[in-house]
Amino acid sequence: MEIEYSDKGYIYKLKGNVFLKTDNYEIYSNKGIYYEGDGVSELEGNVIVKGKDYITNSNYLKHIQKNDEIYLRGNVYLEDSLRIIKANEVHVKNNFSRAKNNVYIYLKDKKIVCEGDSGNYDLNKKEGVIFNVKYINIIRDSDTVDIKTKIVFVSKENLKLKPLISLKTKKEFAKGDSLIYETLKDSTEKITIYNNAFISWENGNGRSDTIIIYYKNSRIENAQFINNANVQTKNNEDIISVKSNLVNVEFFDSKVKKVICNDLIEGVSEKWK
Image (cartoon, rainbow, N blue to C red):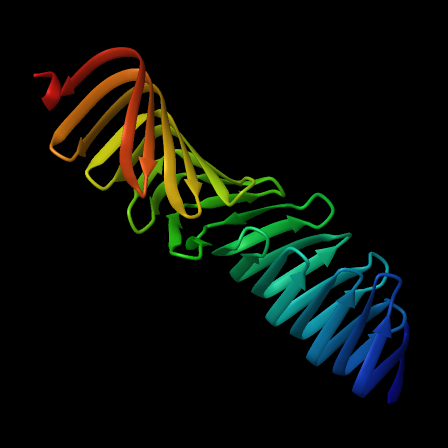
């Protein structure tokens, strides 16, 4: 250890197995400098931070003692019970983290992967937002849902995406102005698409102001078309086309089993001719 003196106080230069402890976390690194007068520590090398419910790793760390702030830079990796974050830079203060430049986020409980330019996350509220999203994937056992959007709002209960440029599975395609994704009980997923909502499936498609889609064990089970609904589907040799304010389409094995309409405005079927 080397010690220097400046007008603001002593400067401690540390090398090898550097250790720093605060009330909220422990910091380890290969080397570092502590500016006693400013209460600032700068550490380099394999920098590890162990918090009460998270751990980080980076090439560089700056700790400001007064505000208990941490700045991380270079191959930043942050993990807690709910997520994994990778980025070029991360700023942590009072359980609020801000990441920027090549931000990668994996939400463990929802099995969702997202990459964007920057993002914020509140550890206490379990809420965050990701900007300029490059892609978002919902990982399933049988396939992956590929979503293209610009902004993702993350909460403990759901995900909100705006706009929904496209949603793709092996058998469905959807789009609209915005989307809310929720995970329910018994391996059920609920996807609600708002404004200019559209979905297509094998041998059919539908559009309306709002579409609510339910997936069970990664397969589409039900789609509800609400307000200005227009649905067309082919089932065996029968072609059905209906317009209504409420259309409910039931699926079995990803194929249409039943179409139910309330307040039918217009309907056409080959069997009705």
